[in-house]
Amino acid sequence: MGQSFFNRREILKRLAASLPAASVAGQTFGAMAASVPEEKLPPVRAITRGPKFHWRGYYDKLLFDPTNRYVLANEVDFEGRSPKPDDVVRVGMVDTQDNDRWIELGQSRAWNWQQGCMLQWVPGTESQVAWNDRDGDRFVCHVLDVKTGKRRTLPHPFYCLSPDGRWAVTTDFRRLNDTRPGYGYAGLPDPNRDVLAPADVGIWRLDMQTGEQKLIFSLADAVKIPQQGGFPEASKHWFNHLLVNTDGRRFVFLHRWKGREQKGFLTRMFSMNPDGSNPFLLIPNGKVSHFIWRDANHVAAYAGHPQTGKWCFCVFEDQSDKFEVIGPGVLDRHGDGHLTYVPGTGNQWILNDSYPDRQRLQHLHLFHIPTNRRVALGHFPSPPEYQGEWRCDLHPCASRDGKSVIFDSPHEGGRQVYLVDIREIVG
Image 1 (tube, rainbow, N blue to C red):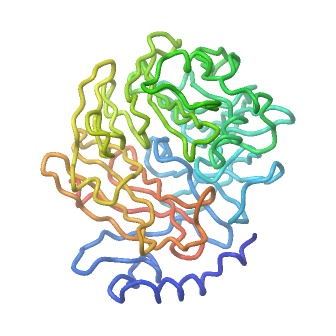
Image 2: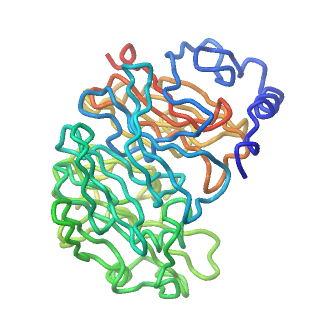
């Protein structure tokens, strides 16, 4: 499937016919942008353009540089199918102060539709970016200084960087590609495909200076920690979504499993020290989706309520059984979303999005915790072709100064990157 699979004119005609007349409005961000009557929505502009397709990657990465001028993004010339081993994605940055000029930085053969190649600014540096790639029979990562052009390559990929950028945690992208398409990388088969919980696969700590890597917690270690009700027969296990906290002293990750006769996978969340010690089962009930560290000791997540099991947004205190529900009936109005705290607001504002609703609209919004108030930023049609592995989630994230938001969307006939000014809302 190439560009012809996503015909902009046909998409627009189909969506306009299916949505209420008041839901499709020609605003500054394009003919397919949608609004709700009587809503005052902030201006949105595309910062990437066709004919090629662009997206950034995941919502929990540093995608603005320290000056908030340059935005990292991926570029590819097709959509609508899984990446093949030889498919190349180009990585670059957009200069938002120079007519959104695209500046190419390199390329990768280790990428997916949900997280790209983990392209991000290296924390603690002024001008370094990092991304994953494939070199022959192994996955690697590159670290590039965009000012000097100096680049070095480490012999392992990374998943999440520490706050100082000196180390990272990672997992097996070969296993992820097998167990959760859309999050692993094509090109290398999983040697443990038939092993349910291998002892030589799990979470590694990677030294971002030397490239040295050490296994700190295996899948075999994880299944030894009891799960209420046990694991179904012949459960296959994997790790996903690793995230270091704000001071680098703890990190969290998801342990997922799926039994032979099980329809979908289940999930629990662990936290632990960077050396793999002191693992703590933070969310044990099998229901965990997206999450973010609020501070060094608290994780906000869309998860099962610890007492009722009902899905909701909660803040969990690390290494304790304390929690609180946030925004019931307001923040969770559209269900699950990719949430982050807006920098510079004292953790009072949460940025969030939604999956497509019955009208195929994806909702972008802010939530003010002290007043329990939700502020819409936009409602964007997602054509029905964008489903499953190659769906285009908004994955919003804010600039480092908390004044702007960027997100991905296909509402103008192909995935591109968009920017919203939120200064008037968050002050």
